[in-house]
Length: 280
Image (cartoon, rainbow, N blue to C red):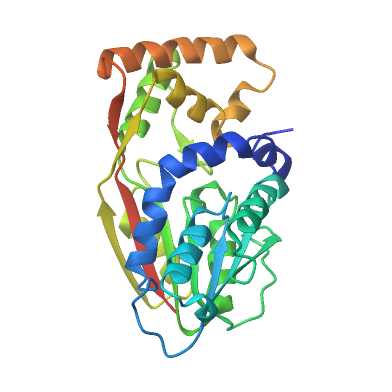
């Protein structure tokens, strides 16, 4: 069984939650800013928000925290979906801990088969999930259908990050002919390109698309902290399934590159990301 399955993502959910708080949480907040939903923005109608491939729910939790702090909790409803039950289980615990059950509801659902009621969502999001999907266009068409006439979809993807540069160098040293891919596509040629993403969105029916690159830096306390976050990502972990020697060699190579490029701990990595907002 590959790790990029509901079961695989569920297995890795605890480590994923820890790493996403440090990395993708920075960009989910930027996505909320770019789409104009954070208080004190004024809206003529209550917000009906859909976060697909939510993982452990960084974006819906950020949204609920902001609206609760502003005294506007009744003005927003969020549906958070993920195809991995283990991810949703963790989010459900966070919702219970923070008392956000009136704002956020969760659902185990594949982004490619959401089965949402058409024209009911004001704002939809997918944070670093689109490039993992076998059929991104199916998901985009479904999201387009779910949005109201004036609705928006906000996607994030990675730019040319230090993490991608690190991954390419590790692969080069282990296998010079290998390509770093997400969802079967070369991330450096496709998902790191706003025009490429905009083209997919327009094919799915979106009429207006705006994108930008946002520069961020992430600090890692130790080399081991970063290596653990990488090898426990299901997109990477599946390469090591039943191959302990391959995994060991990968870790040794990664550690060597990290010590060469970032001598000394803690260290900071540049992590530019793309924020793309599309209107129905």
